[in-house]
Length: 337
Image (cartoon, rainbow, N blue to C red):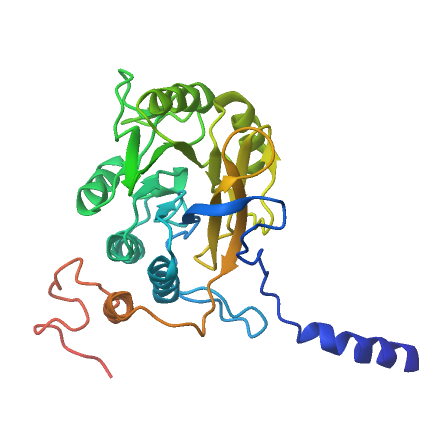
């Protein structure tokens, strides 16, 4: 009994420990030798239709308004160009259309996440498998609502024609970043299918370089293990990953390609630092993550969007279907006590 009590006492500090993962501090020159900061690429992934902070006392991270504020603050404080992306699986938590009130709630959250991306100045978003969770026609409507392009190089109709923009060149000052996106292959639904992601990514990377991109980014929904293969095949400069929900405070390189993952549910912000000089071939890049602190500054405009969404989610009908005679709350329905 005394031994058990001793073990509990030793464990108490660990139970209250803060589980926030710290990334690499911004430094010029970087600890790995890169110097002369040229630009930064900030991204998130795997929002999974969520927008609120983690409720855990030992893990106080997350929150859509907090993430938007952090992005705005980093952009305002930066002396170099800043690019921002979403790597996919932003809109839904699962990939099947639900029914009635549950589906209405899921779609309301997806609209909120698109609108928040508009307000926070996303440059592009990758389409992940879960983003098709409301069906292809609904995702196409969300793409029309978004002020940033939703990209996919391998999501096509059954004739092989792309269903979304396959790539984009994003210019900031005198820098040009080329961006494309892939999701897993061999998907087949009534309205779409997906081609081989490795071949599609390689073709788009080659085309973006030919179009004048100084740096090429692939937004990958393949997962961390597959991203290692993607790095070898596509030969992009950076892979920003979703699906596997890993947090990589020190991003690895495969060949000359940096692979960065930044967790899920908006709790971390991926941070790629692009330097003027360093060691080895290709662009000199360092990838890390930054925690989105739940107690941090909250973007007031995005906060207002969240509050409006929460108010609508409190309505059990969400205004989806009109009340019919016999429904609780209909003027012609007698209440039973």
